[in-house]
Every structure is written in C-alpha cells, then in structure tokens.
Amino acid sequence: MTKRRIKLTRQKYDWAKNRDVYLTGEPLRLNPVYADRKAKEAMRQVRKMHLDVSKRVKELFRTDLAKQTIQDVAMDASITSRARILTNKLAREWNKRFLEFSKRFSHSIFDDITSFTAEDLQRSVDKLTGGATINASRLTGATRDVIAAGTQQASSLIRSISGEYLAEVQEALMRSIASPKGNYTDTIKAIDSMLQGRFRVYKNKAKNITLDQTRKAYASITDSRMRSVGISKYRWRHAGGSQEPRAYHKNVLNGQVFSLDDPPVIDLKTGERGHPGQAVNCKCYREPVLEFGNPEK
Image 1 (cartoon, rainbow, N blue to C red):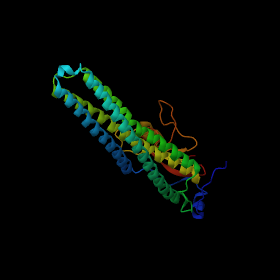
Image 2: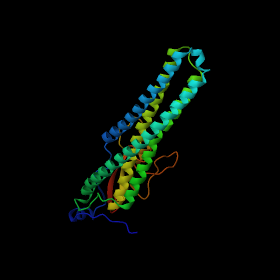
Image 3: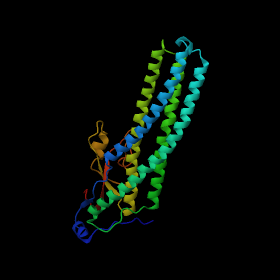
Image 4: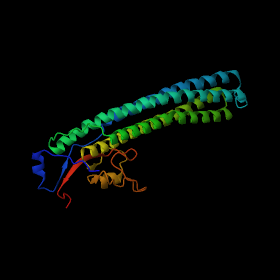
C-alpha cells in the first residue's frame, strides 16, 4: 500500500526544497490539567467505595463486639460468616458500579482525546505545511481500531480496582477476626486503620492508571492520525519538571528524530521499543517533522 505524502504550500515548498532542513510542526502534547482532572474523577469513585465499605464493615463489628467480650470474638463463627457474606455482597455491588463507571469513564476519555488530537494535529500541520489545506480530523479505520482497543483496555484496568480492593479488605478482616485486639476500641481502631490503608493504596492506583492510560491514549491516537495525513517522523521532546525523570529519555532521546515505523528503545533494561508517552508514567511528547535533503549530515 502506497504511503500518503503530505503536501506543502508552494511558498513553503520553495523555501525548503533547496535546504537541508527539518520542517517542524507544533508540539503534540496532552494538556496535563485535563489528565489531572480525570485522575481526580477516578479517585472520587474510589473514595465513594471506601466510605460505603468502611461504614458497613464497622457497623457489623460494632454490633457484634457490643454483644460479647473481646475474648469471644475469635471463637465466634457467626461474625466470621457474616463478615464474609457482607464483603461478598459489597464486592458484587461495587464490581457492578465500577463496571458501569469504567465504561462511561473510558469512553469519555477517548472521546475527549479524539477531539484534542484532531485540533492539536491540525495546528501542527498548518505550521508544518505553511497552511496547506489538509483535514487532520478525519478518522481512518486504523485510528478507529486504536480508539476501540484503547477504550477497552482503560475500562478493564479501572474496573479491576473494585475487585482487588474488596478482596484485600476481606482477607484483612478475616485476619482481624482471627486475631482480635485486647478490647473493643482497639479492634475498631485496627479495622479503621486497615480500611484507611487500603483506601490510600487504591486511590493512588486509580490516579496512576488514569494518568497513564490518558497519556497513552493521546500518544496512540496521535501516532495513528499522523500516519493518516502522511507524517511519519517526529522529534522526541522531554517534558521536564518531573521529580524522577528518566535520564535516558532526557539525555539521549530528547531532541532526536525518529520514525513511527522504527520506534527507539525506551527502556534500556528490557529493550522495549516505543514512542513518547508509551512507557509507564512517561510525559514525553512529539513534534511532527518533515525531512528535506539530509538535515543531519
């Protein structure tokens, strides 16, 4: 299949044809404010789950511990059974809620990013070509496939949070029942501390999953759109500002030109290849380029 060739305005072409130069478009970069906003939305969903689970679990323990001495708790099979029944019920309820939430949430991300990438690429192409009439918003079959696959993956990762969270809560509750603290107050405090700890873990997990999937969505849709308009190369740009930047991305990849068809190594330890934004928590981005002559000679 013949690759599409991007067209320049006559003025831009005449300027570039006898030069060894890269024509560079506007940077293609996800707005971090948007990514943070979606991450907070996912964290709020986890918080709703935590508050409901915490309330109902502590109610169960308060009722049972008020009826008996703390020494009897470990011997009470009924509280073990009811705690298991409750956490199983909570898992069913919240797995269903997260299934519905993850579908809405992932579709909203990919719908938004589909629009963002069209607008951003159009601005980049306008600069790169000198204003040639090119429709960068057209969705090809390949780009639609990228969107569908990415939406499904993001939904699956968000959906998994509730099941993992409730499984850990149930296991920790069983341990609390088997080894109760010395009195009623201490047992309730231990249960509350456990629930708070699980909440912090899964709130951060929701944040990291959302940020990572949002960046990957932007990167994958951008790459597919670039191909569709005939742009096959980009200059790697390091985002900067990270507390723990990848030295290899910052000091080696940054500023180099790569082809979409020949991605560079992005992880020296594993040999993984990819483009900006594809490694976990990578905030790097791309600048589309067109090559004239041999700009690197």
